[in-house]
Image 1 (cartoon, rainbow, N blue to C red):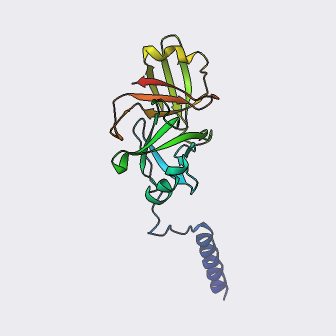
Image 2 (cartoon, helix red, strand yellow):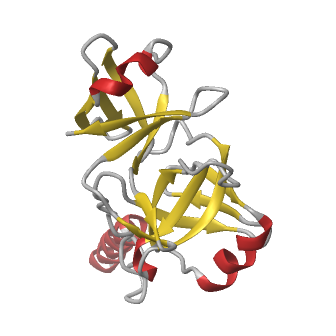
Length: 203
């Protein structure tokens, strides 16, 4: 009788420990979240609204002009690859263009709406800046660093840029027949300034 009691207690303790340490398996239809790898100047569409707001992977937001709002909401897809470029045309109607790289360079007029989130791992900020020689080290939330060199003609624009400023890397492109030809140059947009300043940069 005593042996049966001991066997029952042993079985109960073992079974209890197994149940306590058991973890449910993730459903096969829900794989781990993928790691998004983006080239410099590339961004991903992670949020959109009917009134034309667009959120990028770092939490920054742009607001499209009313004529382009529904195009983004109805035709652009989640995770489309985008790039941002300053609107350098006189009387261009917006401060920036948002270009959809997955839709053959289709673009919309946008203005800056809000800064990237400071806690987002994709947010990039200035880690070190030399305003005299135009060297800027940019670091993201994962501590990855990239060294950018500012074009000599734009170095004078760095006089009020500071360590810790949040920045956005875009492309410097020239409009041609309502389409864009992506150039090798990039722009760095300082999101901390009242009037968004950008400088042309290269690696």
